[in-house]
Image (cartoon, rainbow, N blue to C red; front, side, top):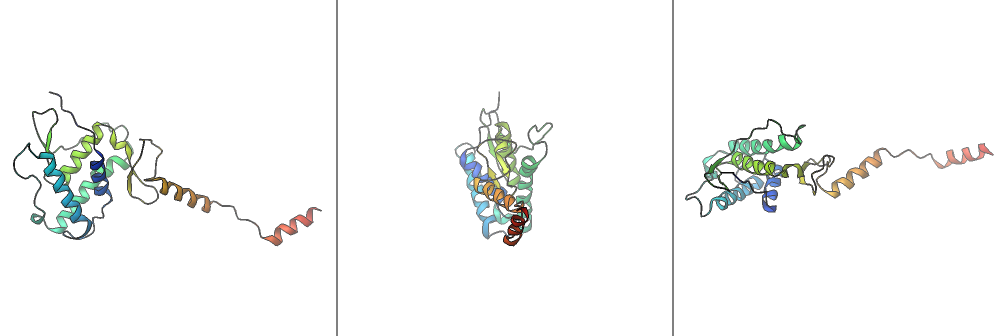
Length: 191
């Protein structure tokens, strides 16, 4: 039986960007890390709804804050290696740990227990459908964004960042204009 990995939906792409852009230096239970944890619990429960009984995602209170932070950093690093890596276009010899999935099924149901399982599952689906090429780390603000097309030369997360980078580059290389007396002196010397 052939296994089909569906392309990432718009909401799943937003979840990937949140994982990549969320600051992982705050304490668990407060701030963006706790909000991200709640969204992932919802995602994991939706993925198995009416297919597998019981809950899959681990309880947030089971893990201390430092270990939780480390797990989210590891999940982010998985995506960063593919997005920022030199050979990300070909991915020859790239191996990925898939989370437990319900087989035999044409469209498998993932059993997501922690951030690494979630990151690996979303990355496997993105690579299978060549969607990983659309995620870019911005050269200006260092945030992650989604391109409209998977071009190799795209380096910015949005058009606004690209415009700001162009403005900054133009200002940095702007030739120094001579002052008014220098210009007048040159004019009079010519005549």
